[in-house]
Amino acid sequence: MSAELGGLMLELGRRALEAADALAGSSRERRDAALRAAAGELRAQSGRILSANGLDLLAAESAGLNRAMLDRLRLDPDRIESMAVGLEAIASLPDPLGRILEEKVRPNGLLIQRISVPLGVIGIIYESRPNVTADAGALCLKSGNAVILRGGSEAVNSNQAIHACLVAGLVSVGLPAECIQRVPTQDREAVGYLLKGMTDYIDVIVPRGGKGLIARVREEARVPVIGHLDGNCHVYVNAAADVNVAREIVLNSKLRRTGICGAAETVLFDRPILASHAEPIVAALLKAGCEVRGDEDIQSLDPRVLAATEEDWYTEYLDAIVAVRTVEGVEAAMKHIARYGSAHTESIVTTDQAVAELFLAGVDSAIVLHNASTQFADGGEFGMGAEIGISTDRFHARGPVGLEQLVSYKYVVRGQGQVRPH
Image 1 (tube, rainbow, N blue to C red):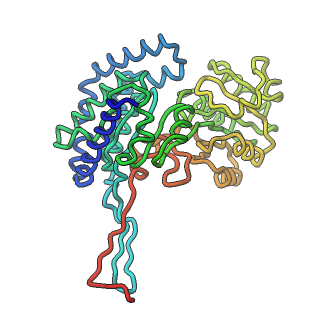
Image 2: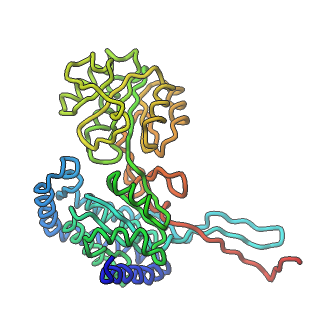
Image 3: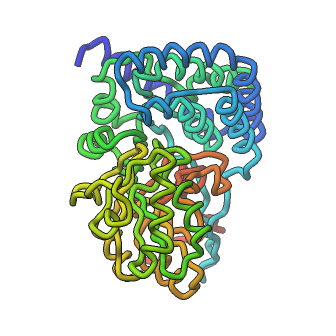
């Protein structure tokens, strides 16, 4: 670690601490005004953002990034508008700070309140998706947390252009520009410094990216981490499923956007519906350009189905590839998910309410759905405005990480002169 880089990172941390103090004492009105101003700036600077994104896409294509990564990286006018709308949606949400979460009066007359407060300074390390710059910055601002953003080198120009819009929003309402900082170097050692060398400044790390990044963060971080390792999501088509509903859910879950962590990677079919359900749905997947890897039963339905290996049941493809397997009922489906899944998102398709409730109660994943696409695993779809990511942890935050997951609490105790007896 060079002295120059170390000094740069420590200065980011020092400024973040000062900004966190200013944010903690700011009003909701000012924070919301900054978000709305940033949304306006995103729209005004749309052309500049698209030009910057074009540079990133050219470099990514030259570097041989796959389709899924290119899709994550690509911006268009609709995606920029979606970012702006997301900022405005976050601004319209209730203030997560200063809420009385619990209140009680003790027999001695002490009034004890548990009140929501910011976490402090959040470090966010992410890859590919430029929209994370807007979503993460906005959520941290609304929740009163200063943030240090470290995006991937493949999106450096896009991230810089989006970050400038967020800073413009802050400055326009008199909040410190340092509330949302961006690591200004692509030196890979900067990530190590965020994870291990800034414990005096950073309170929590949120990683968002591929399996390699998440694994590194979990291994090296010296502060708490909120995140997930991968998104091996499942759709289970039960024997009582409506075939038309099942077809729409499976195709949407897998193919709407293959590169997101909520995309389905494995589809499970009950044996009695192989001919009625599995065969037409597999054919629809193949027609849509999706590679299908199946067990022997699934292979027998269509000669284009490739043989699935044991590794396929564990794999997060993030591409137009899906593994398909036959199971013997809901209990077998749940056992498969427990063994091979990543505790991210699972869906059951069925008209049998009792079976659905068994699945929803028994599958231990962050998100479980009934008769709905796994691609609803998204903070915006959950009414959070946006999200930083999906957490599969059980401690502090689970599922979409939005405003409610970016606050902590403190106890405020009010008395009238009480002292504790000897």
